[in-house]
Length: 217
Image (cartoon, rainbow, N blue to C red):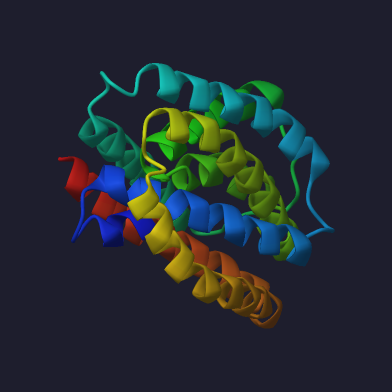
């Protein structure tokens, strides 16, 4: 979530997105191995078609949609949802059945915003967090969903010239750090209590949403 906003402090957001996509694809490979069990198949079956459609919309409109508008929208959605979770007196942890229509809607928004600025996490979490998945199922499902999404984005990114040799050289330098960081993250998910885990996720969503909203405005 923080990758593009942090890099955008020193380089253009478009360049940042091009640099990070190969890095994400590599981290996805390690993540798929680490979380090869425990993901929610129904959630994926609902979200992935919407995500792919969202990438298609992003590709088709890449030349005409202002990136700032999309960034602000993502920030606003994430901010509202994070505040609703933090201000609610009691957050239900009872598992809910994933519904198709909302999943397709949020899947499209996830794919579109992820294509534009790798900021698909807030709309994804708006749909998935209320489902009451356990922390391992939440982490595993997100890993698989975004691995598929990032793989789908490779072709349009190449077509738009964002996978340049210069960007790929930077990505290669970052890859060893990525490989280690994935497994550090897996250990943290196992170690953190479930309530703390989701509290950290919510505060991280709030922080990155504020940054995205500020950047967009």
